[in-house]
Length: 311
Ligand SMILES: [Zn+2]
Image (cartoon, rainbow, N blue to C red; front, side, top):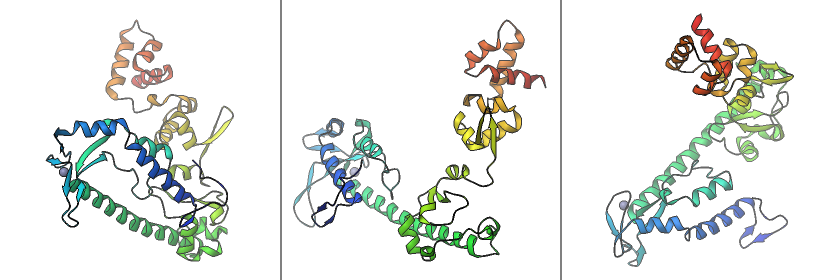
């Protein structure tokens, strides 16, 4: 969802994307109080008049209590999500994730007493804080590794970077500028140059998973089949298996089988199943086609298993 375009302001500042997002989110949160399953959760936890069972400490608590400090009555039961936010730092990256968590079915909610809810919130805040600190360190590491590769001839990776003319744009000599352009390092991702012969600068860099990067490396192995030239990772994706499984296939199988056989037909078909297939085939009266259907494998896969048994 994009924020309204144009020069808009709202009270207290400019209408940025982040502000727009939190505005929509708080609106959705308001609406979710009327969400049926949320009300159902409250109903399910009710054990008596104004009394509810906390899912965490399993104690019966009343709906409101007197606050120790303010001496005012405050709400003492909270409807809470069972599952935590996936990434405590980034929160949700798509509206789909955000909305589907907010409007889960009744088993996605739990009722917590005020004390338990407070503890949970404190814990979550701590994780967020630690995680942010950790990511700052990791980002710094990433940035200094990049500098090593490009400016230090003694670096192990000098030959593939500085040694072949890859340089770093002027602004990125400070960590602050680097973070301003790229943001903190997301978990599970590393710095990747989009054009492998280009320099380190905002336009040519992104945070990418090892898989995304694997398709982008200058040492990538390309495999051609039937007019298509793709990397091993891309072939693996087309079948729906991992990189190492595809490499294994390419070593052990013929190229057509390796690149086209469905994913359940990997070399990892359990030994016991393979034995059963061989026995049934050797007993006679059954075609490979039938076995393929029975075991949910391709006919080529069945034939492979039978041939392997004869070796
Ligand atoms: Zn509790």
